[in-house]
Structures are given as structure tokens and as C-alpha cells.
Amino acid sequence: MESYVERPPVPGLAGVVRTAWILRTGATPYLQRNLPTGGVEIHLRVGGSPELVGPLTGPQIELVPPRTTVVGLRFRPGAPPRLPTGLDDLVDQRLDLAHLWGSSTNPLVDQVAAARTPGQALGVLEAHVLRDVRRSGRPDPLVGAAVAALMPWQPVTIDALADHLALSASQLRRRCLHTVGVGPKVLQRTLRFQGFLALAQAGVAATGRRGTDGAAGLAVDTGYADQAHLSRECLRLTGVTPRRLLGGDIDRCACGHEHAASYGPFLALRRRLPLRA
Image (tube, rainbow, N blue to C red; front, side, top):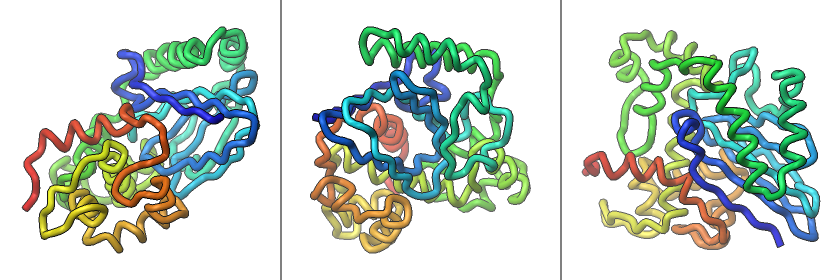
């Protein structure tokens, strides 16, 4: 039977990695639906080569073979691993990291293959990326500030954000394209949907504002005009309806996986902000 577990990254990666995870398939192939998160991911099948996924603007479907273990890191938007090119050149692509990192991936592949447990394999990947992050320097701080401002729960226009950062709208867009892979408006829409997923995965009850509850309430709480608006965005970003994505329930996730490491950062920010009327 397929299993998926995730946890926060090791402390040294907390500023650049949102989630560390392990996927193990059972006796049958597993259909994995990779979704836009605003960041990139590194996927490493035990016994295979590491791959870079994203930045995604829509769903990317893969069929993971039976009895396969995959370890991965989901990076925060604006804080990618060291790469020889801007992320705008890598949108919606899946690339062998050997083409980007060269022979430095060889020891990583060997050490992951030699790991005795999936947890140890994930630790090997984290240690490799941590060394790389320490060499690559600090991500663009203005893009980091933009990402924080574009998180759900607080409405902001792109022009107002650019003014706040003392940039023109075109300068903000260029910097986001290079460091995030997409422009600020696309990132804002992606993060808003991730905010909805965070509420559904955590089983958070809607606040009941505007007389709504259930999925309609969660949609409004996240910043959508209504449930229909949410449904359109879900189809665009995931290729399926909210009900199908969440495993049959509209207002909470019923997939059976534990997603606390993914939704925690979104909910932590929500708790620090006053609710909008």
C-alpha cells in the first residue's frame, strides 16, 4: 500500500525549504499529482538520480512504479537551490539535476542508495542541500519580502506591493521571474490556493463571515469571491475539482496523508493577522 509522510526540514534548511517528505509505493503503480506551490522541488528515487521539478503553473502527473521509495524537498518560493540559470527558464519542467549540478550529484546518489531506511535517505538529501545552500548565499531579500506579502489572508495589489518595496511593477516582475519563475500575480494566485489547501488539510472550520460555511466559507476566508471562483482556480491549478482533489470531501482533506508540515507555515501566518471583515 502507498504511503506518504512529511515533516519540517532540518533547522538549517528552514529558511529555504518548506517540507521534507517520503513517498513509498506498494504493489501497484501510484499516480502522483504534483501541484503548483510557488516553489520548486527536488525528487530523488532511491536508486535513481535527483530531479528538479517546477516551478509549476499547472498539474504535472507522473506514474511512480511499484515498490519505489522517493524522498523529496519542497522549497519555499523565492528560495530555490543553487542553479546555473534563472527559474523563468525552468517553468513547468522536470530536469535531471546532474545536468544542472554536474558530477556533485554522484556521491548523493550513492549515499542515498546505501541508506538503510527512507528516513536516512531523506537525511542524506537534506545534508547535501544544506551544504549547497551554505555555499550559494542569501536569496534575494526583496523577493523574499514580496513572497511574504503575497501569502494568503492579506489582500494586496501588485502596484501597492511594488511601491512598498521601492520598485517599479516591471522591476518586481523581473526579479520574481528570475528567482521564483513566475510573476507576482501568478504567485499570488498560487499561494492563495495553497492557503485553501492548508485550511482543508488542517480541517479548519470556516469563520462564517458573509453567512457562509463549509467549502464556501473556506473559499471566502482564503480570499476567493465565492466557491465557484475557488472551483475554477482548482481546475486551472490541479486539473480536477476540489472534491476530487481532497478525496471526496469539499471542505476538508480526506486523502489519508498527514500534511501538517505543509500547511503549518500558512496557518501560522494566518493566526498572526487580523481577520478581514
